[in-house]
Length: 410
Length: 131
Ligand code: FES
Image 1 (cartoon, protein in one colour):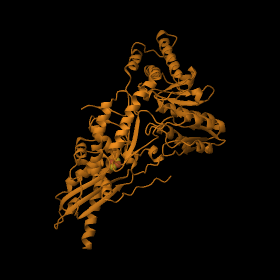
Image 2 (cartoon, rainbow over the protein chains, first blue to last red):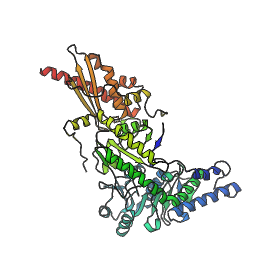
Image 3 (spheres, rainbow over the protein chains, first blue to last red):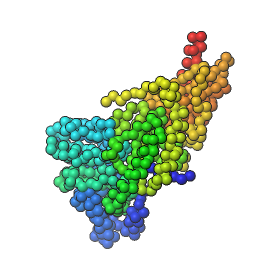
Image 4 (cartoon, rainbow over the protein chains, first blue to last red):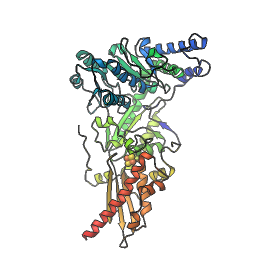
């Protein structure tokens, strides 16, 4: 059976040009950049420098402002914990939102629990937007850091970072961090235009390798390193650099920059076709995220009376791979049912808790075609209907009683 | 362990993709509806019980994950033809075992099936007492 991958928000394949750029650094140019007195090391260091320059250019940063990490998760941890630890004398209040990735909320919970920080989790509206007024009101004298994502990989909404940053800058001395992981493949970022202080990047949406990311740290900011050792990355991130991945990351940024608008132009009509097809052919669908201010490759929604994991399994059985924010599908590798958590993003935008289990995200990529979209549109209504036929809620609905839906207390 | 089948055993997938006894029994002798607060899932079990207290027919409707649907399907197969006393001995472990095992985080979905039997038989007994 054909395999149709529509989960590019969670993984992109390496572009063959990226892979090609990486290959020499596994065998031939295997040197350690820290041993740059010797030829092999020096060869590695110049590749590292060159990569750093390319990644810096990608977001309009300076060479020394890019710190390579093992991925976006580590970059987020470094930004939050690293900044909080080094600047706690200035205050212990941090602001973030209810729709951040776990690599933002988990370190923040640790800062609250173990280190006496206070964190404000800003609510979002039904599209997933943070309100600039709400943000302004939550700023305090002791607020040292605000962290708000660029785009949401689940519901696709893209924040107006420029406005949010200027609210923070005009009304406080807090620094601004953004996790741009989900957006950086589609949205042109310029750190000096944005006036941002810390920014997390990874090649996840850029057809680069896994196991690498970067944190932009504006010159002059002081961070406490989380991983200490041999002083690599300006002392902010010790450990021999993952050079093949870094070279691949840089190549992915270089290509991403050149091809960004072409990619968006390719993906958007496909996305719209899928969106419109679902809207037209399936009842009880609720699209999530903002209709326009959203990632060009993302279609997200939830369906009443069907559960997300079942939808995923049936789609997968038919060769189509997507993702879901349902509790049931959340942590199959977990040790117990306590490891299953519904996506906080969906509850934050007001999806009733007991039905956000019917959530699905299709995130498209450059290898998807119109034929694939049409195939999905052809099989999907049948899948949904099959699950409805099993669902006691649907039975009640068509028999006339409206099933009771638990409202989210907001 | 993850393998080419995904997170579930072939038996689970078989029952998920082709569930047995799905649907309603309009004149059911007992109906049990149980839910799962952790994920909002619901299983409704319909039983047709004869005068000898033998389960002649069992059908289910389930809103839930693959494991919940497969457990529902399996449990209806397991209790059909049994007396209600025998049916009450079916545990979530026996359901999970018959399905070739469930991932640890999904054991509670088979608990749903066990509870549904209990609820449906309770409903049957209550209805009978009222007659
Ligand atoms: S019913 Fe929710 S995890 Fe199985």
